[in-house]
Image (cartoon, helix red, strand yellow):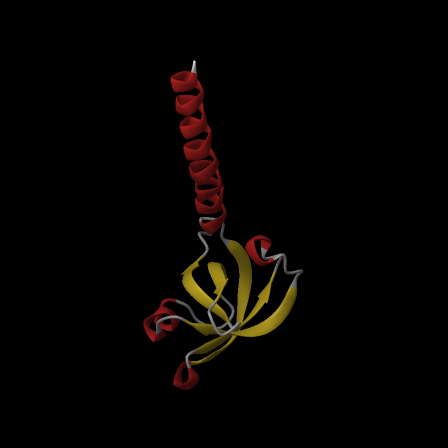
Length: 104
């Protein structure tokens, strides 16, 4: 009986570790919608008028974001509708980690 309880406890522990990771991974895949208002390539920043950003619990607004890689800014231009992913970095700044022009 003890062996069965130990096996169940191990299974429950493993499930409790894996389930939150899978939910977090699904959340990481979520993209937000926005419109490019301004690109500042020199400072690696982009201004977006965006809808809600679910992974940050952020309401719609217009704001400047840093981009992880300056090459991302070459994929879009002012006025483009975009899908993007923004995350909070270790300094507390919001950084776009992926961006692409939305399909028309």
